Amino acid sequence: MSDYTAKILVLGDGAVGKTSLVRRFVRGEFDEDYIATIGVNLKHKSLEDIGLDMSIWDLYGQKSMSPGKHSSNYVGAEGALIVFDLTRKKTFDNLGHWIDDLYDYLGRIPVVFTGNKRDIMVDFKKKKGVKLSKKTKNEFHEYMIDEHYYKSVYSQEPKFVPVPLEETKTWFKSFKKEYNKQSSLFFTSAKTGKNVEKAFKKLGKYVVKNQIRYVLD
Ligand SMILES: Nc1nc2c(ncn2[C@@H]2O[C@H](COP(=O)(O)OP(=O)(O)O)[C@@H](O)[C@H]2O)c(=O)[nH]1
Ligand SMILES: [Mg+2]
Image 1 (tube, rainbow, N blue to C red):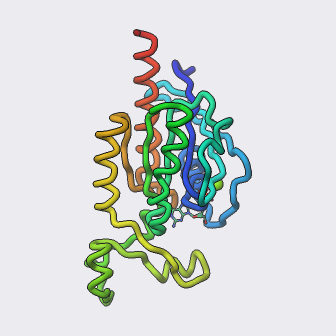
Image 2 (spheres, rainbow, N blue to C red):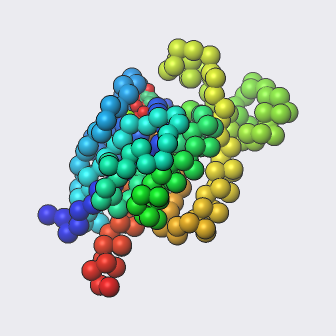
């Protein structure tokens, strides 16, 4: 038996990998097929080392959302994993909407941001034969998307705009300072499993810490 239980939200635009991250974390599996989540996908996971039973609410995401749209699903949540897609900058630019909506409703609960699909980003400096324009280099410095891989997964020419990783770090630093010290940023891959457990665990630790504090106060 765990000492603590908590409701955790998984938020972010459509197709960023919310359901895949939850599946990887809960079952250790990955699926290439995209089946849009309808409504809520609810999963449970026990984190024995920190003594926490998580109920994970994976909510359907939409490109644009109006504040308060998800409020009824937010009730009682103590932490949120907010996901964006490193291969689509728009999903990073939309983080503000998700945070505003969440914080309007629940106040400043702990959040872990995950830039997902890290496996698709390749370090082109280490890749032979890849030529990039100066503009691309300036904008995205280290990382580009593996176009061959993208085509094989999405069966179309890449129409992505990758997220410069440094930009996310800078943005996150100011978020943490101004909004919430209980926040973290990870680059994850639901496909390879990279950092997935770390991201959920970090959120779990913030939540447990708050529950302990609540009891002591
Ligand atoms: N390469 C790669 N594909 C991913 C990753 N996470 C999700 N996907 C794919 O992206 C698509 C959308 O994932 P899904 O989890 O359904 O997104 P959701 O709408 O946010 O729940 C699916 O085709 C997944 O297989 C990842 O880390 N790497
Ligand atoms: Mg989903």
